Length: 195
Image (cartoon, rainbow, N blue to C red; front, top):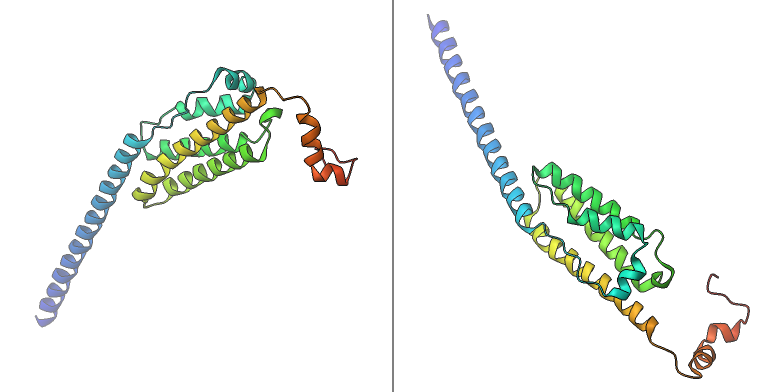
């Protein structure tokens, strides 16, 4: 009889402990779902990338730049269904920003433009990484999206400045003066830009 009583107590305690484990799992799933919903809401509200106004001169300069046109198309699309859609879109934007380094128009193929493109690509890579984590750091997302917009603005402003400076006519003798100041060419007359 004692054996039956001990076995009965054992089954009751085993059943009670299983029920506690099930309750903990449900609580953990509920917390994870709340976090996922919170991240999705934050992404939906803040996912707004903007390309600033571009001058007519800049637009004509970059009209044939396929990577830039693809980037503009990709950045306008906003995922709406789930976090996985945001993950896929951030991967596309990361690749699209990396492609900006390909076939840059000759007048814009400068270190200052390339460095801004690399910073933009780094920020999109960070966004892709943070969204892919199991527990998405919401503060990082809230910081990154405005930072990406500021970098895009900086890139467009720099391109606009380069195009504007190119259109300023040179004064008489300015080319010779600049050539005289260029110590690399004076030291090595056979030096070319491609070297």
